[in-house]
Image 1 (tube, one colour):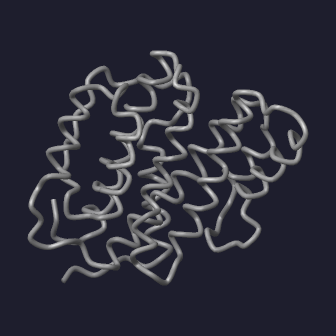
Image 2 (image 1 turned 90 degrees about the horizontal axis):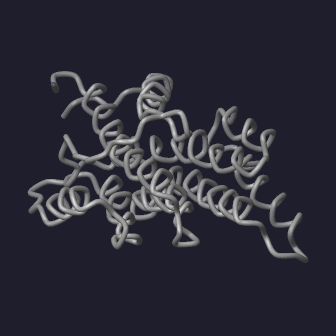
Length: 226
């Protein structure tokens, strides 16, 4: 069995892979035809991320639908180890906290709340910046209708808080659901079911890059694997 990298090594590689995803902002080019380059069937955390994307299957590009279905229907002889699942969960948690939630927060005008999430350094910190963002927005609109962008920011922050909590859970069955909540945060842009073609393309392209970045990180950290 290949050794699992220590926490400091993982975080350094995790941040590099996170930003290798290409970002989640308007200046990044979306992929016109998403293609999954790496197989994720053996990793339940990544599979939970991918399967959650089907919440909006009706607007998902056909190429992505086909690629994910192929993986989810793949017969797996041996799943990844618990240590590998936890590594993937930590990657998806960081991706949610430091990239996805801040993107939605900034679009809604919550720059400081976004910066707090981007600067979070410990997923085990009980005072989650993402949770603070969620409650701040909830309190602001406690007695009025939440505006569209603020609603997206609220939802993404809530899912980011859950992803951070799940990634460090003792129960591995809970840990693997981190991928699900990362996807839920990413999909907030479809909450009103009228996302612009440009926003939709960004979301799907980001999802593909996230899956591939996680798998690339896993392989890069396992000596002897190409």
